[in-house]
Image (cartoon, rainbow, N blue to C red; front, side, top):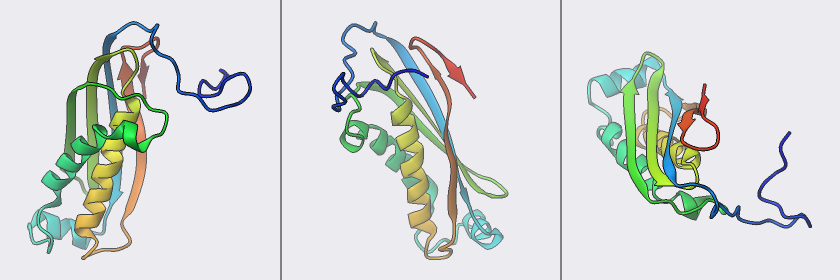
Length: 154
């Protein structure tokens, strides 16, 4: 197992120094699901949700959240994001969310993609809680990342 990079030799928390890393195009994709009842899905299909259509609100919330990642996760670096795209799709189990984030930087954008999906899922919950309170947000995960010292694909 690799040494944890956010601790110094004395065990104190530190921000990782990425200044010697090469600036490359970095990309990450994350996904998540919001499980809903058949009744809630029907309401979304019929566009009769009391709070309106949650999909565009969730997309913009995810984009805004990705841009705030360094303010939410204490040791994340502020990154100049080139692209944040959040997709929302109604499925037979509820809502599937996916976020793609791109930058040209010396560190990756995995956390930005995960934050985007998480906040988009929470927004779906918030917009639909009037009709269903027991929705579940599940399987928020990194799907792929490229551009650093190692690539990853689930």
